[in-house]
Length: 139
Ligand SMILES: Nc1nc2c([nH]c(=O)n2[C@H]2C[C@H](O)[C@@H](COP(=O)(O)OP(=O)(O)OP(=O)(O)O)O2)c(=O)[nH]1
Image (cartoon, rainbow, N blue to C red):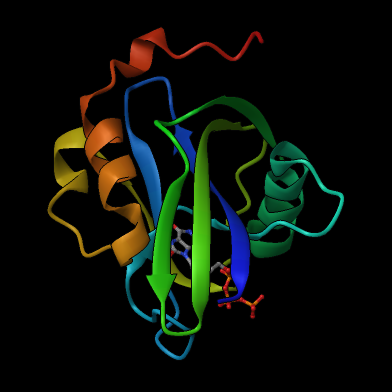
């Protein structure tokens, strides 16, 4: 089965909110909430892919922090997704919605109440429990 490496951003703010984005209805896995991001291109690091995707999807710049949990593997009918999610902070706030119908800043407790793609389950659970004030962007 086709192996697809995907990277997502868990964008957080200083008040402990997480940015989630809703996939446009007509896309694969449409109308589900997700970590903004996309497919890693050949030769790209996950961090570089994430910066490129945030530029393409929102026209925003980010700094990338540590990984959230571990890489999740899930088989969809169109391929096997390997999803890695990294903490990120926004350097700009344009949010030009090109691939998403909306974005929302939510409390951690809200994360588990939303509908996510099947691949995201464990990472969302992990993210809901992490003390966000401890996340370091120095590394
Ligand atoms: N960005 C993102 N994608 C996810 C998540 N969970 C998950 O299963 N995916 C899937 C959906 C897509 O099949 C793939 C991400 O690639 P993508 O967003 O570029 O998907 P796409 O097929 O709509 O885009 P494209 O081929 O037109 O560029 O990973 C997630 O949390 N964030």
